Length: 125
Image (cartoon, rainbow, N blue to C red; front, side, top):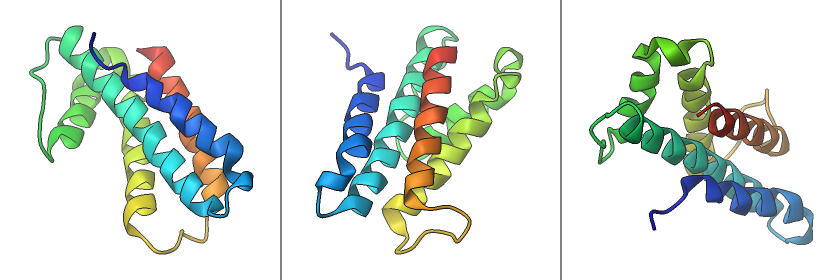
């Protein structure tokens, strides 16, 4: 059976919920954001491949190609799938590559918003 990308949401939810029991709370929140992104991205990519007959994108451009697919598809414009994926990807990049967070958002806020966006994307597709 094929991997169900949305299962990453459970891992992210676990990290987000149990973060205060870890000595590395910020690391748990950063990891949760990444898992929320990959849950949404992987689910959206599989939807595009199976439902829209998109060729499965691979490699580093896969993320950009999936987001652009939802930009162009008029059925998904009103649901803002591409905008939420783009924002999730931006947050994931901050969590994976930056030493500090922008002053406008805390790690806890980012993880909460990432959970909301991932849920919306997965429910919409």
